[in-house]
Each structure stands twice: as C-alpha cells, then as structure tokens.
Image (cartoon, rainbow, N blue to C red):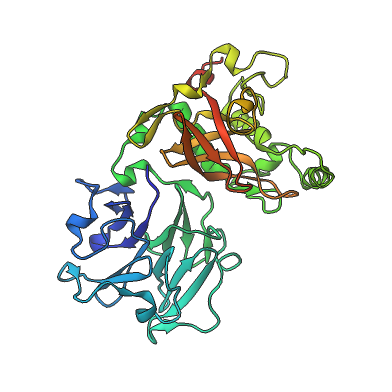
Length: 405
C-alpha cells in the first residue's frame, strides 16, 4: 500500500488519488476503486507532472491545479489537458501562498481555499484571488483532530466531509461540526490503490490492525479515548503523567528511564486477546519474566530471513511484532532497544505502531514512519524522534502467536 501524494475530487463523484507515477479513481460512497486502476499519470493527464505530485485541487472555474516543487500546472477539465504556457511558478500565480513544496490544498465551501505546508496553513480568498491577511497560521489549534503537520493531502470526500491523509492514515473531518469525526485516524485501505494486500492478511492480523486504528494516536499530555471506552491506550498500558514526570527526572539525572514501547505493545496484545502477552522482552521471556519467550517457543524469525519482492517487504507482514536492537552492527547483537508492530514496509520506509515516542514527560502511542537503509540485506531503521538508528533483530510471527491457546 502506498501513501497518498495528491488528492482531489473529480468527475462523476469520483476522487483522484495519486502515489508516485500512478493514480486511481475512488468512489467515496462505496470506498471502492473504479475498475481498471491504477493507471499512469503521464499517459492519462496530458501536460501534468508525471509523478510525485505534491498536491492537486479542483477549482470552481472549470480548472484543476497540480503543484510540484515551486511550479504549478493549470488543467482544463473540458478539454482534458493542461493549458498552454504551463508550468509556471507558484509565486507568480498564487499571492501569499507558500512558494514551494506544498503539502495539501483544498477548495472549501465558504469561498475560501486552504493551503498546507509543514505545521502551517494559509487561507486563500477565491473572490479576490489572494491569501487573507494574518496568514500563515499553525495547523494545531485551528483544525481539531487533524494531523498537526506534514499533511500529505486533503480532499472533499462525501457531502460535508473532508478527508486528510498523512502516511498510511486518514481522518474524516465534519465541515459543519468543524472537527474530526470520532474513530480516526484509520489506515488507508490497500484497495484504494487497486491492490488487494489486505486479503492476504489473516483475520488475526487484520483485527490487530483494527485495534491500532481504534486506539492510536494518543499521548500522556493529549489522550484520545475511543468511543465507548473510559480511558486511552496510555492508561491501559499503566502510564500516567506522574510516571512521565518521574521518568523525566531519571533522564535529567543522567539515568536510563523506561519508555512506554513495551507497555503499549503489551496493552495492545491484551486487547487483541493474546494469552502470550510478553512486553519489551517478548523475544526472550513471557510476560512473567520467567517463562520462555517467543524465540525459544519458535514464534521468532531472525532478521536475515526477511523476504523482499522488488521494493516491497513481503515478510515480516503487517501485524508482526518487530524487535530492534539497541544500535547497529555486531556490538548490538543480542540487545533489544525497541519493540513495535509492523503496519507497512517498503525498501525505504517502514511504518510501525508503537509507544515510546514523545519527549519526556510526555509519551506517545502512534503510527510512526521510519526511514530505512540497508546493510548486508538487513534493514536499519531510524527513529523520527531522536534520529538514532536501530538494526532489525527479528520479529514475532503473529500467526504463530495467535495459536497460543
């Protein structure tokens, strides 16, 4: 499954979603891709950037606009091709808008358009054709429940609903209520890109991914309690603000404070119904610290057994519990520096669901993008918070773990 590069509403109620050099048309009502997709952007969209579009937006003048880098293309809907004389610079055509590397753009229902970049946004007045005074402003605090930075794109989805994408997740925003709908973010279905990877997942794997959708993201300082629940995932994992403060004192004193990754994993596995819960040391011991761990029981797969197919990691699979070493190279052998749940993996980026993030005294539980490099066919994953690298030691095969009676 790919992450969304660009999104916009299109003809006959369909939504255009692009990733890399391909695009699909999705029926939002059925949440289904139209037959025959994905297709090539370069072949179908005459004069448009052929790949890696930053953002796209359908305007109210019979035109669509595609942005990439510091340029944009105006596309005529009626003739189904780009207008002559494009691309042009964003600076020359969009007064007050970020001049390059836009993240997202959308035409709202109030005579305004919104442009997003990093942690900020600009409100654009359609009638006067320029940005409103006082912008840019921070996304945080103005868009309740929306990703507060690095939005991949957004699009008018169903009447009164706008979808915001980031990474492999999306949220549904209620325009009238001016807030995100409950139960989000969710994982972007693979079917939206014309793939059927979710059909290859066992029911147990899919149920664990559904739990991730329900309970993440959350944090000590900004808890998200799912509908029908009385506490958030941090609380279920036994973490409180007091523990966060105590851990910060240990760190400030030069010690090695505990982080929440093992506790979050344990909480998710309990919710999932595992009788072999484990935690940070799941590879080596059970939850009691005395019984055999996943490795001795045969549930563990060493990193050198990883399987690639092109640029896609085929094993480990989504739902497997990954164990990262505390560092890189031979000196890190046998150590464990982090545990999490794999959501998606490619050659250059892994997406994991885990705790342990956030600067103490805060702690987070969320889906995280991790840049990857390879040494001797072993992936080295970089933390997005402290930028430290950790080598993959191996993973717990969830299908075997599920069989533990």
